Image 1 (cartoon, one colour):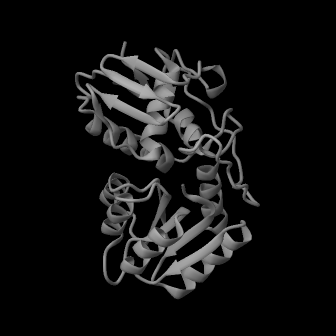
Image 2: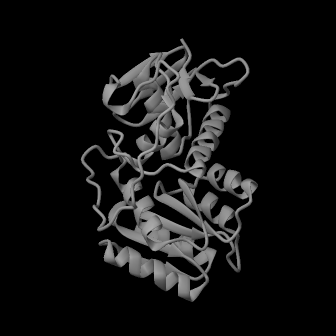
Length: 266
């Protein structure tokens, strides 16, 4: 099981490494650092952290390959940090197993808020408890699209235990999902999004609502949701569909409601 009070920083820039160390130490984490990808992989293997911050531009192995190697043995939350804002980097980063993506330069408060959101999310062990962080990001109330029917987190029927739907067998208790008898290798974000759709039945989940789901917010508390946050949901959904073998043009499980969000096919 991951240690909920341990974090690993994989970063070759000493100043940035020190900045992230201060942020995580102040937030109650036991921090371990690595200057390159190979050291980072071994640090994750040795310390079993809950959080990994991962620079893409490492001197030995690029961050994408580091993420792939970590995902072979660890289910830690991975936040990729990079000076590149190219969309393909975002796509590839999330596809290789990252849970979030932050472009340099970043505000310390933003990194702290994103880590806090991850730690509020359900973990594989039912009795694991999240680690509270000391600050959260500023909040701005934004309108939610009026197209419907929509469901907010407070209104959904929460599915617990095994659930079968059109060849999909989903079990929230042991966090497994199978399609036609084959178990899916899902990241935490992909599993949580699938869980949200299964919870909601025929009702539509907006992208904003799904962002809040990944942040662990049970209600709309007016937290700021950017275009990048919603784009991340689109990327996770694309990866989820690919792993399920679902065709977005003729979906078996996940239907896109254009301009609004997603729902389960019935």
